[in-house]
Length: 550
Ligand SMILES: O=P(O)(O)OC[C@H]1O[C@](O)(CO)[C@@H](O)[C@@H]1O
Image 1 (cartoon, rainbow, N blue to C red):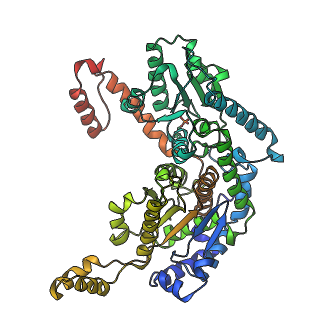
Image 2: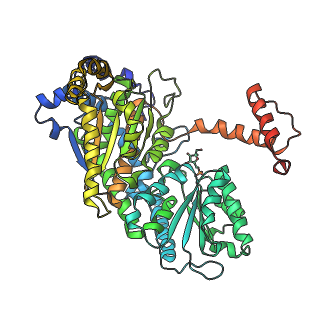
């Protein structure tokens, strides 16, 4: 591991700085006009996906320099480290082997791979028992509903995949509960029947407050419906590395599927954490999902830097972040079934690369992972696109566009595609004040009013973005898409010199939360927090009805 890497000390970085100063004054449309081959050349394809980065603020020289930067950072060697099980998570002294979960055999990692294959088989059996109706509840009724209780990586990936693959959905309905707010579980249980409901407690650590709290309430709900302790085994499965805690909770070992410390939570949808997806869409489709990701892994490992899609996406991320100063990045899927993609990518990218020290612990004096946000088109167009087009914040974006629809409503789908391409073109071109004025005059405005309004209608354009397209959203292309973003995240972490696989920043809040809970549970305890927290604790205490403080 090159733990001493600093992005701004790589030889090409100084040249990129000069290029950024120069390119800021140029319109991207000029590149596309002057360079007839750009629209085709600034693309790459892999695993059923196409990346079009022709509308980024880079020219050919900059692209060469970015490739050079990747070579100087020894990105191909660092990618091999990841794939070969090197200790890329240096603070926790672990490899990060999510790629093994969707791989064929791998010599050096044979022991681990055997466990992966055995777990896949256990998942298949479990999913097929449920789908075929063989898995029965305590009254001998077949299970009809599965509730995944988990949070973060134990929720966002499975939830996204199940929702995105709804066209492949079979008869079992999968639901997701994450929040410790009792309303989340309560709302979900409202429509469910205990006798036909199965809970999957999904927690790598089996220590997460939200998941354990919700699981205890779910267990009480089952008991209240008449399930005895031994009946509960028909209604609870666990996915965890912590088998002891799961059995202590009352889930017997034979109902537990393993996880491993070498898979990070946000990279775990490919493991047994994805069991609810396999149940929702069936084993064959889940395998296709793994295969799509596996194809992207092979592309990452084998494609040269110049045509490597995850590397290119990462170089563009670093270019926009560090050289053009963009502090955020929007993801805009033009497909309703990908509505959860931004949520998933927020954890993936911000928990991975929201870091301020290098692998060696030294402080970094350049920015790292940007804020990621977004929503499905066309909803965002009627909300935040105003800022994308005319705001003062530079906000690079990825449009994600399946070219066909599963709905069978092709005529309406055309409108969605037209909107996506129109937004991309509007971000590229913008509109000058003179154009805005001409348009106003042609619409009957008088000279004075048109002059006054024109600056409000003018749009700078030149907003850099990618378009990631695919023939259709299938289990395989979805797998490839998620793997693409995983690899972009890793490549960017290498360039920034940070550890993408730890998340120490989430711990302090958990510790303080436990301390504050003791103060909320016992009103007689004096609160010795800071004055602002003390005041809010007092306010909360005053707001409670007498029975709530029991
Ligand atoms: O699967 P677990 O151990 O319950 O953790 C859930 C989530 O909590 C985190 O540890 C953050 O608090 C995430 O990294 C993880 O995905």
